[in-house]
Image 1: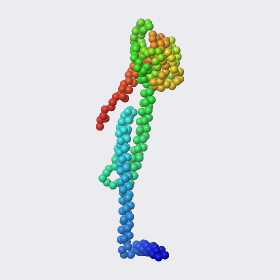
Image 2: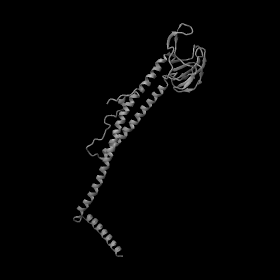
Image 3: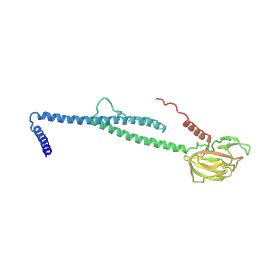
Image 4: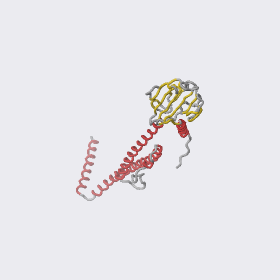
Length: 291
């Protein structure tokens, strides 16, 4: 009972002290104003320290994000060059902001302005990289539609493109493709992706397949012993479409391979060499990048 009474007295004393202190501040009694200012100033100092610590942490994080943006910009320049786009177009416009300047405290307004600028720059970089990605995708599709794949793996060329002595007539005649001698049944591969537009038995070409690769570019595969595709089929680069044979006007098993562009026969070796050079460039070891 005595402890309870003591507790009530302590609570009453605290309440009375609090009432007297507040009343003294309101009435302007001597000495109370200075004490109130000390208490208030301490609270303000604590709040300001808390805000400053948080602003400094946010500023450091923003500086890291801006550093990442510089790295993304540098990478974007290199990728844009691979896509055939002027890398200078990837650079941020003048006055768009950069890394935060150290050595001074940032205000809340300055920090928010820097964050807004970073957000705008990020959005523009995303849009630009989307354009670069689209261009690279178009180039990849285009490469898959150009006949650079060897139609007979590891095959050696027999008769090249150009004039030669015809093995049947013994007279000089134009040879409109490349011959790949191989055993009967050797796989014949599509030199590029496309659509089969011809699959027929021809008096001279024997079992023949033609593939349309778009852009007025067609490849022809002749003298097959067996054909595995039909007109209208979509084929991929390197897909097996037939097997080597000696059908039609032929003196032995081989693939006769032709390339036509806009109705004009071309030397297939130019296309196949381009594919070999590209493969060699991709496999070549890369030296240290210049700084």
